[in-house]
Structure formats: structure tokens, C-alpha cells
Image (cartoon, rainbow, N blue to C red; front, side):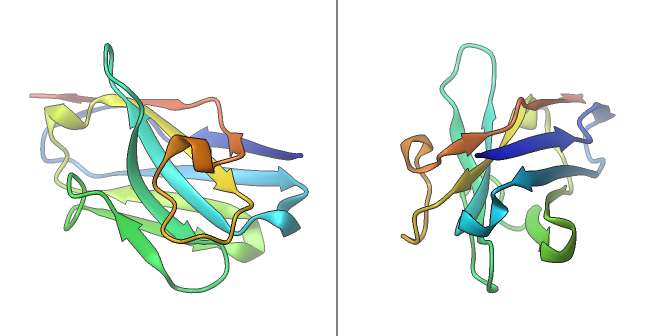
Length: 125
């Protein structure tokens, strides 16, 4: 089993930056890919960004390209999502996820085996 704990979500203003963190524990040796998803009220959970757990490959949804950066620190078993130029449309609960599948890119919720509890990001206009 893998446990994921997100942190860093809060209320910010449009144009601000925010960094989310996700720390993995447990059987982390089985992780191949990690990702960030988000879910706004009344909407389905959507893919934001993914990264190979080992290696430099990253993949982004169009909504975050040029504004969001997914980073990882393998030594700390931590995944980050650096979000710049935030917009009110970015308001959502952000979830971290881990996948044991080596397939790439991993953009669907069903492809991930483990999920964190989520952290709320609210962007005011």
C-alpha cells in the first residue's frame, strides 16, 4: 500500500502563485508514475499533470500548460505542483495520485492506484 498526503492548498487571489506538496509513504518502490488531478464543485475529476516517478518525463493538461509545473523530489518521496498566474477557474480540490503501471502518459483516474485526501485551492477574483 501507498499513502499519499497533500498539503499547501489555501485561498489566494487571481494572479498569485501556489505550490502544492504530496508526500508518499509505504511501498513507494512500486510507484512508476504520479499525477495531480482536480475536482471543482459539480464537475468530474480532471487530469492536471503527471510525472514519471523516476526520470524526467512530464505531461500536462492544456489548462495548465505554461502556468503549472510538476516537480518531484525522490529523496523526500515528495511530488509538487507549482501553480503560477492562478485564475478563478483553477478553484478546486486538488488530488495527488500514484500509479504502479509503467504506461505513459497516465491521464485517466482509473489508471491510478492510490489517491490522497485532497487539498482545497480557492482563487478569488
